[in-house]
Length: 495
Image (cartoon, rainbow, N blue to C red; front, side):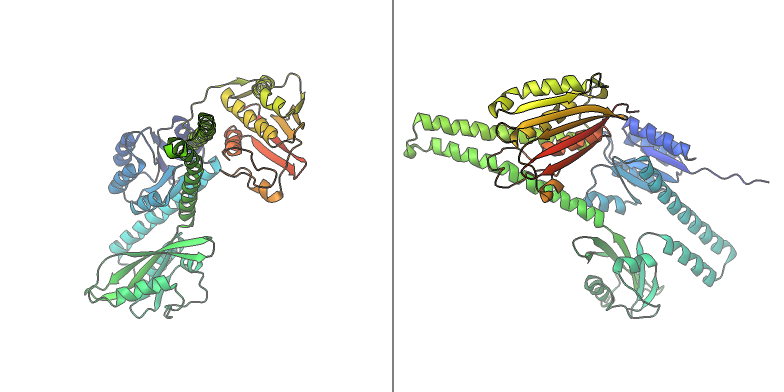
């Protein structure tokens, strides 16, 4: 008689309809049973109605945030494997969600392969937990020998991704799994061996503090350690005393977690805030300086000079406004809150209107434009304002960084399932190290030829985000002193 295999049951809680339905279909095609909720309140109701194997919970929802949903589901069913899906990952939320019982993060946007991979990890973890509970019940019911139980416990603990070390009060190793050795970069250790010299000083200090206490406090002490230089591997060690039945200290259990990605996210966030503050400070300081000069009666600034200072202030404030608008655009793209009106976009017409818009700038530097555009070029499905922004940024750069009386060459043609657009200038060009950082936020090439050229340093970052949001690609070729060529591929059909 065939034994019926119970399907793995998954709950998806996300207010984004397209993502929710797409993920449901994908996972159902993989053989999972999937239920969905479109808000936090509904997610709590369904998540507490029965025990799911895996729950995928969006962090940001309009009614109840994902951490509250996670807390409620884990409170009802502690063994449900929960993932937090978010584009807002930070170290603080990572620590908070982990403490509430989250198994891991699924960064948005994710590919089908990434989602399936994370779900498979969660299912394996769930199976380990279920198997552990079954073995515990079996031991209790059948009084299995300790040796047999220890063997099964080894199998389970060695399979988990976090590192586990158990040390007795003599600082001798009594248990470990291979993840712990990998995190601590330790080799050739044996059970019963003293390990105080092999452990990082931060962990050794905590162990010594626990052992030397007169009274055992069931408290967990944590510390973060950089194992590999340049933030390549950072772990968090959680050290907890293990009491004997009589209340005396038996030893210390150490759980090691890899927090490298969370720390990198935190570092990137801090760097970004610092860069924004710097970019905002410069024009504001200049405007304040000009106004202070005008307001200082002792300087006797004539009206002509006052007008000059006000005009220069206006230019600075315009650059500040451009910077804020660019920052808002980047934020909307990252958060996917930018409203789009998808329609058939005629690339030829969009290029023509962009060139007309920039006609004054072209004439000002006496730059000629040569175009070679395929007739009957297919349209693409996109937001026309975004495609216009893309071409405006690229052609504007081709003007700003071009030489006087230079040239711009624009080529557009169909290439397989893509519309391919090349924009080449005869301008300054870039050095290899400048090219490598070209699409980074706030990066602007600084050399003897770029002095006096204004900009926010966000234009090309926005261009790249627009192209990638339509599943296209952008490439750049440049020779310092001879010019730069941008090549954009935008898909014709996006299903």
